[in-house]
Length: 233
Image (cartoon, rainbow, N blue to C red; front, side):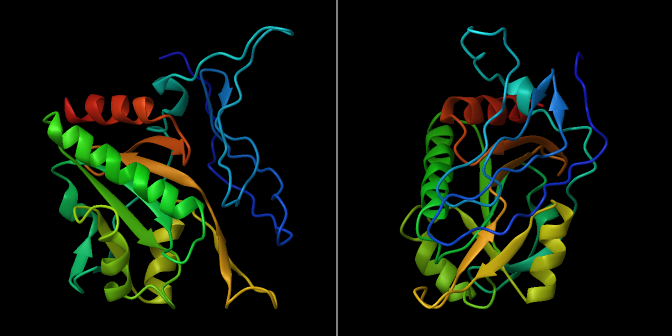
């Protein structure tokens, strides 16, 4: 495979100014000469997209699945949290199928509901076409996201999405495995706070191995292509 890979996947946390766009970040992944990150790092309103090298004046290249290939990164691993029914659930419980994993929270005003709707649509559409996958939302706001809260929230999208939460320590361990960062953003005009967080969709194969990392606003067709490829084995 023709690709160039930096040895670390290390997003850099940047403090945002409330009410304004957040600054950019770099993720340490180069695949086929493409940088898998642009700005901003921890935004709710936008997600990073691959920056493709192209001659001056030429149109940017259309992203392909190979641009998001992350199988050589030392990212991911098993963790245990509670699902929306309160049952202890391990990530490895889903190893018989492709998993689309996102770290977000139910009180997010914009990015998380949009991404959750994307995950629900993808899972429903692929199921109708005979491709099995499992979408999972891991809460990075365990203080407020109880199993009951997650269940009510996910019922607005698709009851087939699994929501996971737990103690602050358990959630942090899960987030650390995927190099996910999250931090409260408090201000007098917030009730009571927002959470700045990493905005990636992690696509895992049937063995629980991370295979692709997509920006949260990745094209649905590209996501579906990744799921189908992994489902075929």
